[in-house]
Image (cartoon, rainbow, N blue to C red; front, top):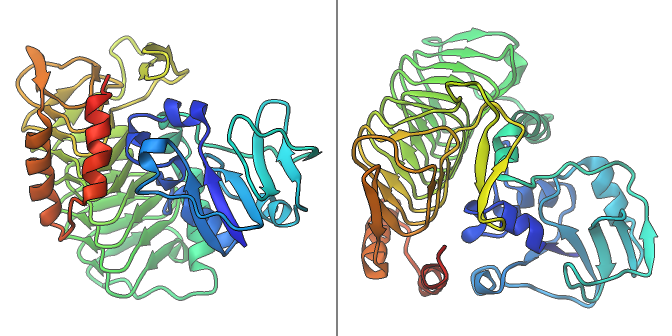
Length: 387
C-alpha cells in the first residue's frame, strides 16, 4: 500500500521552529520518528504532503490507491488496524479533523470525505513542541516493547551496575557500555547499534540512545530522555529529546527540552526549565506571533536546526530559538530568538545566508554529510521569509 503522511497548516505551524526544516512526521518522539512508528505497523511505501518549500526534499509519491494519515498522530496497533481496513472513499475523522483517508487524491484542510468512520480510539498526537518531551516517556516505552519483542539483548559488561528489571535493558550488537550505573526501575533503557555509554555515567530510564549516540564520561541522565543518531551529550539531562546529529558534550543542565539537528551547546551552557515564581510557562507560538500559555510548570528550550550556543550561555525558562542562530555572551538572551540571528542579552544581529552555509558545511562534514542543493534552496526560502 502507498501511504502519504500529511501536514495540516495548524499542526505544522504550532510545531515550529522544529518543522521549519521537516514534515511533522519526521519529528522524533521516544526511540523512533513518527513516520518510523507507522512504517513498523503498516509496512509499505511512504511519502509526505507538507509545506511547498519542503516538497523538493520531501516529495509526494502518489499511486492510484493511497492511504493518507495525519502526520502528527502517534501510531498505535488499534488505529493502524482500523486504517488498514478503510475502503476507498472512507475516512477516520471527528467533527474537528480528518485523521486518515483512503483515495486517489487528498488535500489537507480542504478534502471533505463522503463516508466518515468513527475512530476506534481517540488518537494521541504531537500538536506542540512541548508534547515531544511531554509524551516521550510513553512513546519510549511503546517503542522499546515493539523493537525488542522476541529478541535477546547483548550482555551488559560486568564493569557496570544494573538496578531494576534486566528485561527492561536492551543493548544492540556493537554498542559499548562500561563502568556505569543503569536503573530501569522507572522505565526501559535502549542502547542502539554503535552507541556508547562511557565510564561513570549514571542513567535512570526511560532512555533511548539511537545509533552512534554517545554519553560522555560522568553524564547524569534522568528519563524520559532520547538522544537521536550521532548525538553526543555530557553534563546533566532531564527529559530531553535530541532529534539527531547534535551535541551538548560538556557540563551544564538541560531539562524538558527539544533540540533539532546540527545544534551544538557549548561547555557549561545552562538552561532553566522552571521559573523562580513557579508560575505557568508561556512559549513563543509562531502562528500567533506571541507568547502562549502552555499549562506547564516545567519547560526548557526548544531549538531549531543548525543553532549554536557558546560556552557559558544561559537560557531562561522556555526559550525558543529558531533555525541557524548563534547565541553567546553574558546574561540571558530573549526568550524568543528569530531564525538567522546571532548575539545575546545585549542584542541580536543577522546571520547572513552565505555565512550560515559556510558554518553548516563545516558542521555537517564532521559527520560525513553534505549540504545539498535542495538544502540550500530550503534554507534560502527560510532566510527570505524569516520572522
